[in-house]
Length: 252
Image 1: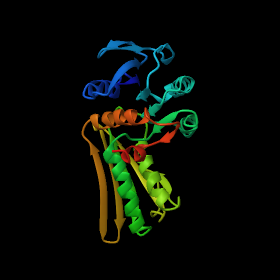
Image 2: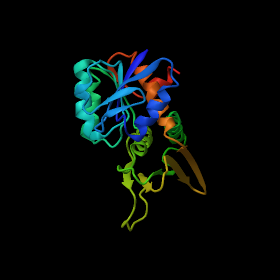
Image 3: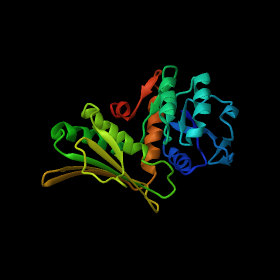
């Protein structure tokens, strides 16, 4: 039985994870961490991660970037593998996550959905075939409570495309106030916020007289929650190092 500590336990994603874990016979939520504190779903929720006395086998973080330093300090000090599923990190914070992997196992990806990671792989393949012949744009849509823009997933997809183009693409975030033709090596990234959209991402390859579109729509938060749980089960068996969804997929 793998004991999981759940950071952000009282948030929307935390509650979904706590509910879905009940369907997994080989793991349980041993403790929650959330400023709200309290108890639900059969486990205690601590206000501070330092108050968690029993060492978990792995930690899942779906909280807020402001909690990162405490989470990494706790996990490094106690040797706990960390699944970092929160989004909206700065470059410096991302560097701290990667640095921690030299001491503990760290699973870090901008999106826990299997489908999104397949989309990224398909987009890479498309770039290999199309090269620079097609203009490329990314459109991401999320609910009206999402704070970061563009989404971490949109950046992940953009980086995947850019790597296939030898980092020759220049990211353009929207085009408000721009009065010029599109530059050949631009990669446009556009954000939509509204209603209760869980998450939609579309990659558009626009060429001469033809358009290719790759898209993914998340219909519920369960797709991310299941991905995080599977990542935790995978990471609990790993040695120190940095892992992502591609490593998990190799073991499915």
